[in-house]
Amino acid sequence: MRYSIFSLARQALSGHRNWQPAWRDPEPKPGYDAIIVGGGGHGLATAYYLAKEHGITNVAVLEKGYLGGGNVGRNTTIVRSNYMLPGNVRFYEKSLQLWENLSQDLNFNVMFSQRGVLNLAHSDAQVDAFARRGNSMRLHGVDAELLTPEQIAREVPALDLANARFPVYGGLMQRRGGTARHDAVAWGFARAADGLGVDIIQNCEVTGFRREGGRITGVETTRGTINAPKIGLAVAGHTSRLAEMAGLRLPIESHLLQAFVSEGVKPMLDHVVTFAAGHFYISQSDKGGLVFGSSLDGYNSYSARGNLPAVEHCVEALMSLMPSAGRLRLLRHWGGVMDMTMDGSPIIDKTPIEGLYLNGGWCYGGFKATPGSGWCFAHTIAQDRPHYLNSALSLDRFRHGEVLDEERSGPVPNLH
Ligand SMILES: Cc1cc2nc3c(=O)[nH]c(=O)nc-3n(C[C@H](O)[C@H](O)[C@H](O)COP(=O)(O)OP(=O)(O)OC[C@H]3O[C@@H](n4cnc5c(N)ncnc54)[C@H](O)[C@@H]3O)c2cc1C
Image 1 (cartoon, rainbow, N blue to C red):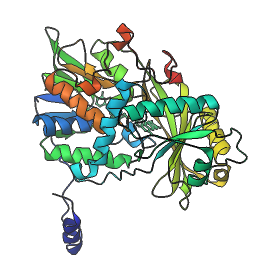
Image 2 (cartoon, rainbow, N blue to C red):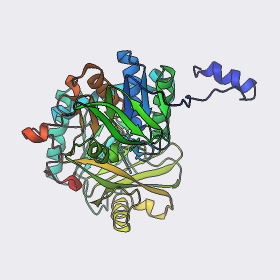
Image 3 (cartoon, rainbow, N blue to C red):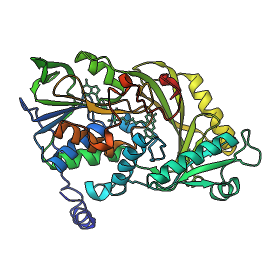
């Protein structure tokens, strides 16, 4: 069923009784040409692009819970490509370009809103670093503007620039960046993949891998054995656990990250704003809530419940930046499990095990990568080699020392 103004009108006239389910609920088949483990944004996008770009439609996405229950439905929805290192910027820019046409491509409104992402600088050194990053972006054909404090005061009046605890010296703006509706992204990819023949199987946990002569032949699941010559892992915070089942030890740690939404208020913040005097980011959702977050909780965990010091740190940053928000009530608050690599950049690659492919290490930043990650991972699985766009996001870069450390924090995941 195509969604359009005409289908909406037709359904309205028949009392909305004839809408079809957005995707099927099939029983798993004994075997597929490819299996994607994890029905988050990346797994669903991979299945969609496998079918759309490579004609591989005999594909199953196996999800242990329900679609959208993982990080794809838990993030603060920031989308951008304002990276400096060539290996990252070319990949994230491809993703941003896919976002720009995603609603039309999927025939599903993912509410992508290019409202601009503004990084605030709080010292001369930060202004210099932002200028350097902006120049690198522009050399890669990506939009970037360095703003003065006066321009920022005009564009973002909600910020307290006059009495700020940490004065603002300037900012780096990417106007093509913005936000998207996170659930819609999962639902849109699921519906479009299902429409191309992909089986999306929920409540199906992968519990082990089948191997013959060193290569992967299938998975053990809570719904039985399912065979496939190619298996892609896209399980975000659970990447290290799944890899361990296959006998791989990865340069990934799992950490907890929390997010917050305030009660709804009238429009007060038109952009996504990040605060570099402490790690903090904020935007206002279309429903009016301020959506914000900060750093990791700082310890390894697979739990999705955070601790209070991280809440306090986040609210302190909010109050330094926008004291007017202090009178708002918090509406919702939750956590997600982050797959942190040792250099803060992701991995999309083959693994040393034939037939097993890896998509993980997304740290805080995998939502914006969703379409680009699916596109590149589908290519890697279908062609059995990485695409140029994900060639730098290799697993063995840690062995060779070719790390992509944008933050220059070294192999300390909780600092990335
Ligand atoms: C609080 C928070 C804020 C964030 N903010 C941003 C942001 O503003 N911008 C940004 O770009 N990124 C952000 N991120 C990161 C982003 O959400 C993630 O990097 C991205 O969603 C991860 O990819 P995914 O969508 O495929 O993950 P998920 O949705 O977590 O998908 C993985 C799926 O694998 C399933 N799974 C796990 N184990 C198994 C198994 N054994 N068998 C079958 N299925 C299994 C899980 O149930 C899950 O559904 C944020 C994350 C959090 C938690």
